[in-house]
Image 1 (cartoon, each protein chain N blue to C red):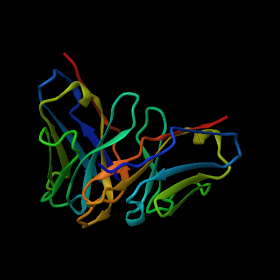
Image 2: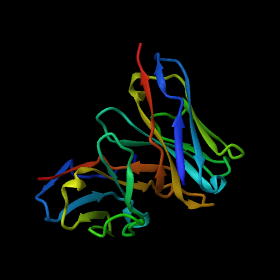
Image 3: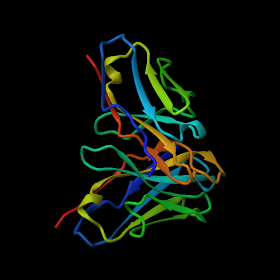
Image 4: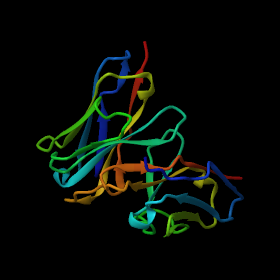
Length: 108
Length: 123
């Protein structure tokens, strides 16, 4: 089955840049989406279609994708950015979704 | 405002059934695919199922295929997830989420999520 691979955790100091990677063989053919989930809350879309930012999402969040790897970048990470981040994409059939395992971002 | 509200969760014994509902408001419901995503306690997000905007196409994760059934009633702006033959590993918070594209045949990302409903499978 199709898989998306993410690092389990990333740690940064406040104001530094956090980068979260997501790799998958199908990424050259599909869009990647990134979700932020804080404890006890529903996921929130922070990047869609590889590099687009929904309204209301701070500019410090950006996305990129090249080949089989996508990256979520938090430039100047804030304490409030501490959360789990999931990448998501469609599988090769385009009929099912797949999430990465999630990356816990610590800002301290 | 655009909103999805899940209901129907609860505590159920292994092997029993449950039906979850996802009520939508604030947008043209009949033009969007709707996904179900679940999250077991302390675990990550797992995509479960999707139903096309007109209900004609349904797809499932291998882990639930043959046990779960997704359906929708566009006249009521509601999607349902029927959970049969429940197992302990189905214990999770179940979210419904709107696919961000309209009138499409394939899945894209989800832009609107409900707050989730909790299903606990335990004897």
